[in-house]
Length: 292
Length: 161
Image 1 (cartoon, each protein chain N blue to C red):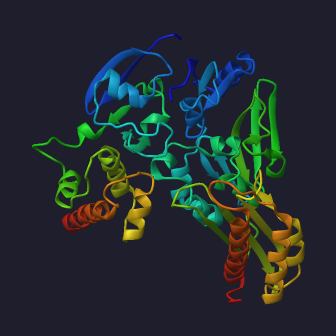
Image 2 (image 1 turned 180 degrees about the vertical axis):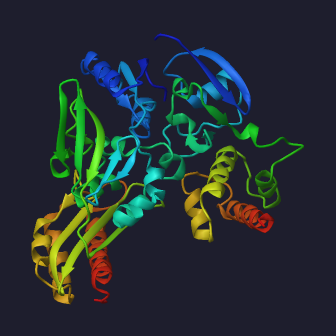
Image 3 (image 1 turned 30 degrees about the vertical axis):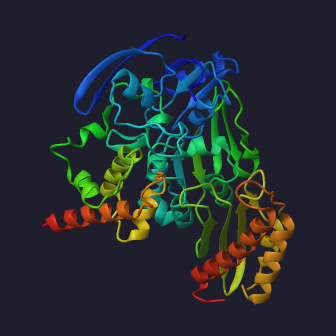
């Protein structure tokens, strides 16, 4: 349970970090909060020969409200900052809600948004939130900067689109649609554990009809998923009992959860069905004031 | 062996300068280099909470940080809370409520409780239990730890103007 030896580089600037990463030729790792990386190093699941610490780079942990109603979040922003941020609560209440489920205080004090999405655990809340909020993720390397949409970012279990010479520097969340109702719920073995299943819903409602629907699930596939068929069913509809049944059916048809130590596939399907129903009702209530 | 690096940290108000390997975990630095064995080591992958300490006033897992990363930082461990003769209010509450049995989880519990008492209102037992959920205790069943936190929370509120 001790990591193997590595060379340690404390980067003071982003330039220093990407240069060191390029020079380590695929054998270097960035450490931000270290809450996923260090366990893997302790188990020797990964053995980087160079560890590049970005914790002292100034300005990477800003949370800035944008004039367009969106939010720019620096990659080094700690989970506890997002959990307690007033601007997050005001602009993206679904993210505020999801952050309440992220790990435990001592982990949230240290873990970062950039680290969580780069790590891309399929049962982690932030990757799903990136999909739900259609985040744009900025990556920097010595070769330059590129921006990816969240849907291009999560490739598989513990696999994101971050190349070995790249660092996530910033996450931009476009403004939430006005008049949007939202909900997020999760089931885990104990508070703060990785989710066995979770569902997020955002509904925009105009004149009693849904004009935009986002339905996301996690814990049941290699990446967080948006369920296109469910979103299509909801479009231009009211949220009534028939619609609810159809959406639950569409979600269940779109997922193929696996059985593992924590839950059977059947139990996960049961959870997803229940959570889908609950979050849809809650989002509709928030958008319209109506109970289904 | 990799390149050795000199670090200077303040632990419980005392400055320490040591030359260490970068791979040395902060938990091992505290226990083996500084001989501050109050910080316990359980799982070494961030699950059990036994190694929880305060770094710059925030609780963290000492097993999920390298000592080299703490260079220049202010650290508080369980040894900094109080002494056997002069326990702090949280330690006294743990004693009075019988919030420990074997004591293995206690240092981490105390540091976790210290941080949650300063960061959250802890209005009900559910919130206290959620705050404790990252620390494993196999003796107490947690009930007496919840009670100890409640006692400190209520005393703190009474003393407010």
